[in-house]
Length: 152
Length: 169
Image 1 (cartoon, rainbow over the protein chains, first blue to last red):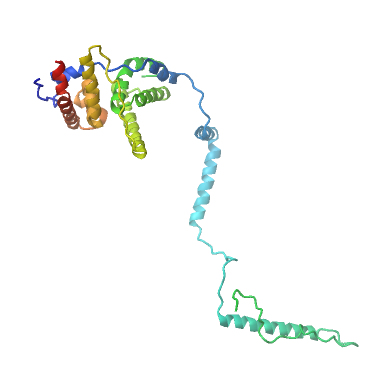
Image 2 (cartoon, each protein chain N blue to C red; image 1 turned 45 degrees about the vertical axis):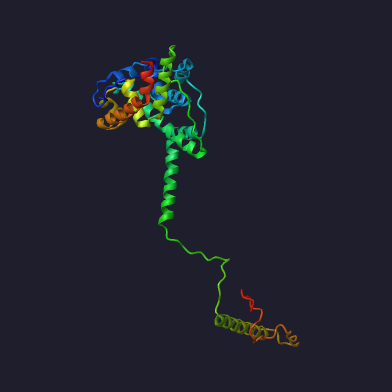
């Protein structure tokens, strides 16, 4: 067969193209018509999440806008407010050895002062004050059981 | 305007062309059916705009986009599933003559081997009788591109079907 040269840059089809173009296309299946046209009939719509939101939005526009404005404000405040550091109770501060000793000394001095004040304010008439218990005596040595986070 | 009442009219006038185009593009009857249904369901929800003068062109353009979306999704799915199935489709009307039937079958298969962009242009040119200008507008491509895609496509068909054509001639 001598198929003609392709002249397909032109809009005029050659014999080969005409031959092909003359072949009829298959028709759509008959049942497809009903399926396609069923779309015209009112169908019960599934009440999914999107439908719910659409109904909510259309039914209560001011409520939704108010919520949106509130959240915008909250977000804006959150973004613009500088971060405030909050003391964390769980954080473990490591104190210097000198600081610990200084605090222990001050604590001992304060205890001694408090015990002296107790003794001075005790009743003097008649009976003598009961002997101070060993635990009441001022402890001038640094406490060994000072609550620290360290084992030493 | 194509209101909801005229969907039947639209279907009767264009469904055959739309179905064949969708079938040729997707190479799957199930996909073509889905696309045609989708197209008309969309029309029921949102009628064709008033300013549309060429209903066939508008519908072809719409189903073209739907078909391309479907093909892309299918390709991704098939790549993921690592399976490629070749479906035998009845693109052309059946014919009693076995030679002619064989030629039509061969043509349908040869069309399937064309790249989508060439196949769509060949289809629109041969079976919709559109000019390259009209095809270019429909597919959002320059007219020269439409013409060159057509030329490549038709030459491949010619080479592929020449033996079969000569045999039945």
